[in-house]
Length: 255
View 1 (cartoon, helix red, strand yellow):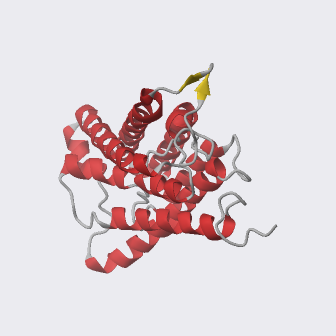
View 2 (cartoon, rainbow, N blue to C red; view 1 turned 45 degrees about the vertical axis):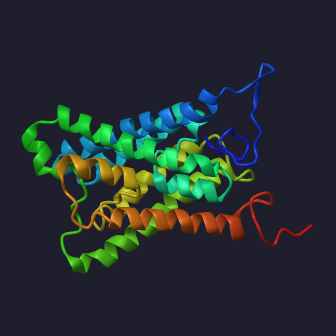
View 3 (cartoon, rainbow, N blue to C red; view 1 turned 180 degrees about the vertical axis):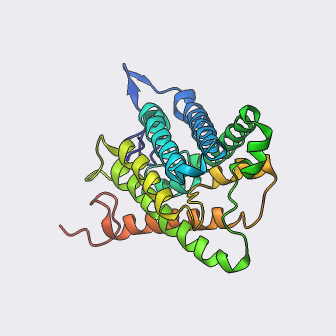
């Protein structure tokens, strides 16, 4: 996972492996490739879990599929890129010192491209009727203008829990631990079970973008960008000013 000691952090000098500097590929290209791969796998599994979901299981199948997939992908790939797979998480990681500013845009591009690839593969392997009946797993919970405020508020709050799990479980020195992938995946599962009927519990602009392109469904699409990105900004400021450790917090450091 990404932390303040990784090669993605702002203050870190090129690390040494066997006395040799880390290559440009391992420092810059490899993390972006991993973000693309991880995002594609996560969104492929997430889309299939929605497209193939049985009405009898309600939200349980998508919740478990998203949460377990994310936890597994973070556990296997997180040490290379930080395991973000989400533009909102990358924004918060930047704000709390877990990502170099020059890597933010490449991470976002990689995550969005991964979302496109994952959604495209989900469309390719799904029966056409099921794909269109599920609108390609694009978010269709918001059906009218009156639901926008509720959906936006839900996306903001649900994403806050997810991003807090990342920042405090994997980046903040005082609270990070080996169970971070499990906790992050569990936060996604809980969020979908709690808020799936309100907003769909997207919590990830890349997860919204790929299916929207494949299904050409753009109704209220901005909700799934503004809500999660505001949550990333909020958590970043919260950690920086109030709940981060002494190295991360900007105020009230004491002696």
